[in-house]
Amino acid sequence: MRAVPALALAAALAGCTTPPAPPPAGAADWQPVLLPGKRATVYQWVEKDGRRAVLAQSDRSASMWRQRVRPPLQAARELQFSWWLPELNAAARVAEAERGDASVRVLLGFGGDVSALPLRTRMLFDLAQALTGEAPPYATLAYVWDPVLPVGSVVPDPRTDRIRKIVVESGAEGLRRWRDHRRDLAADFERAFGEKPGPLLHVALMTDSDNTGTTARAWYGPVELR
Image (cartoon, rainbow, N blue to C red; front, side, top):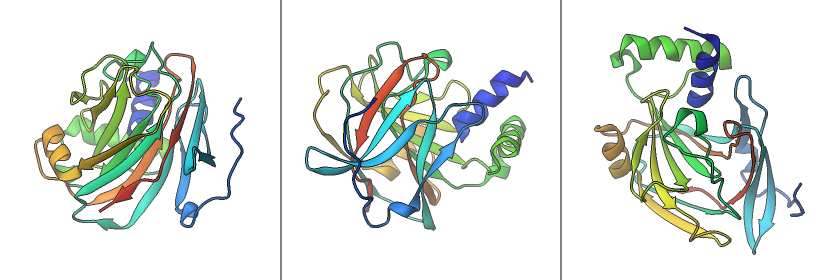
């Protein structure tokens, strides 16, 4: 296995004037997660149009802002989230490995029976754990905004089918205003993976622009589970 694809797979598995704001209650539960060989995206608490938000600023970088669910949630049904995007990265394509950036994405990591996965997948999980210090989740569901793919598209990650993305925004029509989303987690997981979800382990935000060598900026509102 070549070193560069291995590092990229492990990463897949695993100039602003907005004033900073005091973190809300529970903010300490959110932590940065660095990815091997990647520059870090900067995340900070701010106010945006009257909302408490997380500002993400990426400069050819990729990292996550993650909250663990303790204890793991056994029956997460509904997810609510929002984001505010000033512009799209026109070069990004979430379905392509070499251009797989997303200016906004919300990721959810689920547990499951890793021993039931194919041997190659388990070996890649072991490699990812060696590189990052923690095992990847059994499955990761991501909600993304893509410049061209139709809303509702389900996109397996080009490097691992243990990450699957659902396109919830497409094109430029929703730019420069808050976009609110409510999703049925169980239904989305079953549509993406063809099975019922296991326990929810973590929720993460991720803005990246490393593959396209560009910059990106986005705001995320609160993420709520019901």
